[in-house]
Image 1 (tube, rainbow, N blue to C red):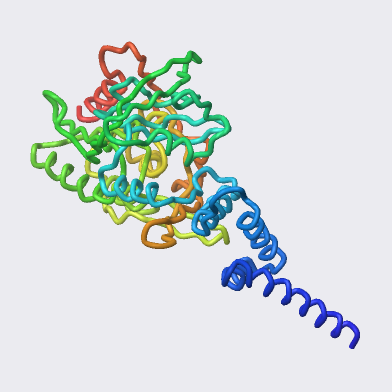
Image 2: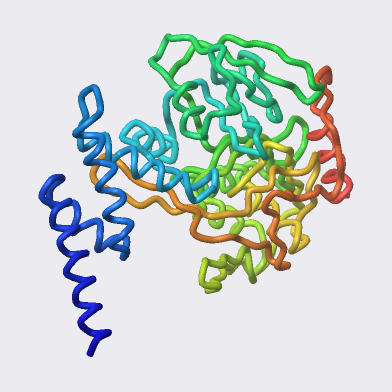
Length: 384
């Protein structure tokens, strides 16, 4: 009986505290308590907001406070790929996966404390300014990146068409250099290709995996078949990935019936994406490098593990996680790492990458594409 009364007294005190705080800051208390499941955390959060509103020497906006709280909450997960997308970020992500977006045309990731360029999309401002896969972004407009998060780095690189951003970069040789890049509208065709000169070897380049990539690849593949294709080079170099399903779709046209990739969520639930292709039709060579990431690695990993083709180039980036985007309202969203993926042999490539079957470096001063030449020579041998 005593314990019951003590619990009731504590509950009354807690309820009084919540109601008092709620009276000051509005109905957020009830909603927040339901979300957190912790009355004490709700009180602490709302008390902080109340103190800011009452004591901060400046204007305080409820929307900005909650916006900042969401951003901080997501960052506290400690995963560089789990991020809050404000209206500008969300719009850019939608444009990128749809096939076009604004900026300087580079994709970067985080390795330790470094922001590393995964790829500089060809025929775009970043690539034209000499930015290369593997460059480390050390400063933006004179401000060091070491204390920035992913969103801050991205926001400083973005800007209005025609404006200039100055990047300090550390190359693979360890030397620092500064490049000034004029921002522009990013051209990002997903798929291109042709027959290699004087051969029956098809060449298909996938720059990024967007919502149209699966269909675009199938069309280009069929087009090259009509031209007499007997072997294929698939170029995934400097491809930062993109839409998971697009990677699965492309792999499904290149690897035989069986697993393409398996995905495991936080609860250990596993599901598998599979190919229904009865037979691999042509000898296949795949070009990869450090800029090949995410969905590009799904394709490369499936081809290597199923021995459907050979990989030429250098080790891939190593992004073996899957993100889902959840809309918060019409303009904002959170992108959350929801699972890890594994190649058909059950290997996680996260922070490891995929080693090529044939290692071929591409010197910066090379006058010919030696990686493509190695792949072409291999396929010519297969056709003999």
